Length: 134
Image 1 (cartoon, helix red, strand yellow):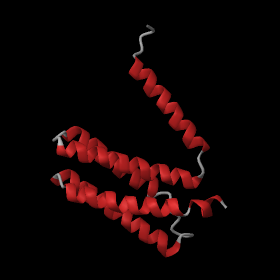
Image 2 (cartoon, one colour; image 1 turned 30 degrees about the vertical axis):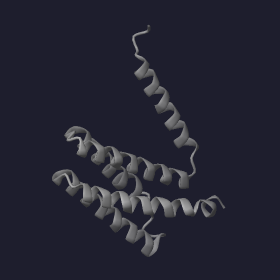
Image 3 (tube, one colour; image 1 turned 120 degrees about the vertical axis):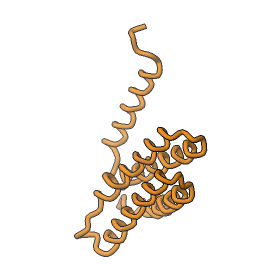
């Protein structure tokens, strides 16, 4: 009717909803959103890998690497976080390397490994939600 499709309007609405959620989220919730976004991207990559959809696989793995490197890893305070932050930093580096390997070699095993690691970290992070709120 006005030159925009339903899909474009729905996409714009979803973006506004996401932006509003981010603005209102606590730091703890923001990290949860990063974990969720990376896991969703990796599930999409796994499906694309099985379907031999190379562009979607590459985009989804790149998105997950971006979330890990420019979201999760940069949120670490290596000075205040001590040994734990250092270990998480190294683990995030490892995950990014495994995802590059998964992309180059179509390795579902490497993809699954990173999904397992991120899932465990997400679960642990969710477990401290009450402490983070206090």
